[in-house]
Length: 450
Ligand SMILES: Cc1cc2nc3c(=O)[nH]c(=O)nc-3n(C[C@H](O)[C@H](O)[C@H](O)COP(=O)(O)OP(=O)(O)OC[C@H]3O[C@@H](n4cnc5c(N)ncnc54)[C@H](O)[C@@H]3O)c2cc1C
Image (tube, helix red, strand yellow):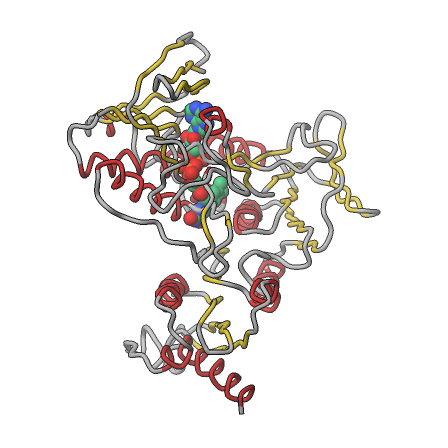
């Protein structure tokens, strides 16, 4: 069997590696426009901040490593057309010194074309000094420009925007983050939890502008300012961290059904066209609570989908479940994470909710180095946990993962509050902060029902 995978990002390469894990004989070819493969876009902000030394360090494998596993990779190569009736696709080299147009046949095709950064429709986005952020090459260009700059504006206060802003601040630039909505991280956090992170960033000297989109980027050939209504902020560079649009052109060409946002797939990562699979940022997921179409542009989602696609291709039964959108991030010393619904999202979906909140410590109170931890839990009025948000200087990710499990298993706050957790003074509190938040939610529920 011949499998061709379009895209050499997290989705495409994980599909290739997983197919090889289960089957030694399948012929696998991965085609990617990118110069590099197997690097972590998630680490780009941490190269800017200097936590990771250089961009070469975030490249984990070279095409040769895949060739050793009998996986052929064509880099700097673009798939231009697919004739799925004949199962042939055409590709061209985009290397400057190479003029190759060729075609390849396949039995099964995997579309892992990811997404393109969304560029808001406004004047000035084509000026020098305005950057998108998606690939390692984008990261290198941002670093080069930042090294000769004094100031930067980051448009978009989602995870990527905040991480990039902190990285640039650590490089010594004057940094402003601008967000059109009235809070940062609006997709994953409720306003009160977002405010803790905002205050931390402001303490680090980052200017945060909320509730105002950039209306226009000013400059002749090079960016000079960003215009927010009647306010003009001068700047040497602007980074657009304004979201991702799924790359669906080839899927459309083949005739795959699209959903509301992206390529429609079933739980086995099959598209509507037989023998065509899709994974990663180019596909649509389903929300575990509402059952509605949802986007999950996360490396973690792409890798999980890739596992399922690979298993389906080799004939092992496996399903990709609706998503809970577990996320985690780190800005400076502050970690934050969330899973499930925010209170705001639950209300939008007309769910009646109660919340539990707790500010506690990450270790026993007498133990040196104990850090504050804020936990917010959202439950429905039967007590079923719908979501959780955590901000602290340590051990956020594992608590978010515990909460993902609790939500997936449909635990109530009362059931969670009675669960067994480990304890030793240097690493935890005798009653874990998430238990304390679950108890608070249960008490609030009792007040409501008594
Ligand atoms: C700065 C940054 C930080 C991030 N941080 C996190 C994080 O902390 N945690 C997390 O889970 N996620 C994070 N993400 C998101 C994560 O990186 C993406 O969700 C993930 O890379 C998606 O993988 P993918 O394979 O779907 O797409 P991509 O990695 O974008 O790969 C798509 C591939 O398709 C290729 N391609 C597209 N069209 C064609 C064509 N016609 N012909 C040939 N090749 C084509 C592209 O060249 C590319 O190789 C971050 C992203 C960025 C940019």
